[in-house]
Image (cartoon, rainbow, N blue to C red; front, side, top):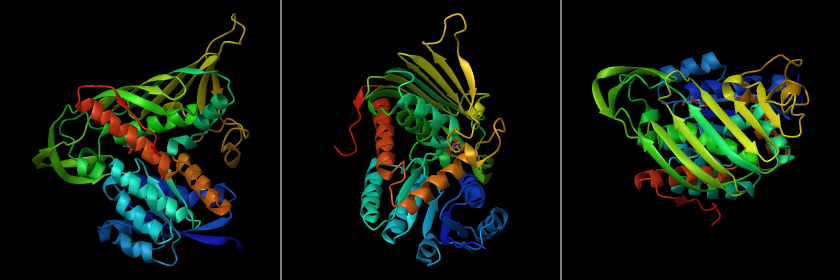
Length: 394
Ligand code: SOE
């Protein structure tokens, strides 16, 4: 028996991210001590047969086929948006106006204009104790959070270089179908928004510096693909008809940051052999640090203060109870995985709701990332000219 207050969660979307977030809501109470008992009240999707199956499989006690009905339910206090970017703004604004807390998958929106409207709604709702957060889950990898701590404590000194890549290869085959992530009206942009947004957010968060200007280029290698016959998660099969790819396959840019660092970013779905390769290297005046998602329980650290005869990049295993989030899990050395980042995200959001504080990344932070993406697209369209990125508050 629990004396905790119940927090009813309603989720929009049941595909890949829906599955990952469902796992988080299922495990939150078992892993962390939070003041709410999570009730996985309902999952929502347009196709009844599929959403019913998802509810059963992922542990939701009911389902809806209409997101307005989900928001109207009295037993739901938090809306978790895992649908494509095309409806983030509409759903999030309606949920916030109805007094529901919101967790919204990244990138926050498809355009800067939509993101601005979402920030307005979030700020108005915050006055009534309603919270909104963007799902940049990689902030919740313990090693990434620990990297931030080291940088903020000054262990690396001033950061000179940021080298960030996010490399995938799931659409290398030209016959891979035209799924929603390859269509501008649903996804906003391609590799840039889907995975580039992660490295923009993560590097800014770890270093505490904001991107102030960019020069970039984008490329769409395969301009037409088969229309979708069937899709599940990141897999799909095509039909005999074809349609136009309306987003980038790859985006590369250089940037300057507010604290004086210079950076290179690369986001691509054409890095053959690289499945989910997010890697960040920071070079500072007193040391360097490497985070690699495919080895997410580790960090590599180099310090100039070390004795030069034994100096080198050392591998630190981030599994001690003193490392961020790790006390909730297993004894030291017992590693965790990608899915835990979503549990940590849910933990931080629910804790902020209970404490009455703004969970980070806020919608305003999501808007700032959106402005960086927009600047990269503008630069690419203009032939890689330099495009300044303003602060979201002007
Ligand atoms: C597909 O590129 C994807 O699922 C992204 O949408 C996620 O944000 C990323 O974490 C993994 O890859």
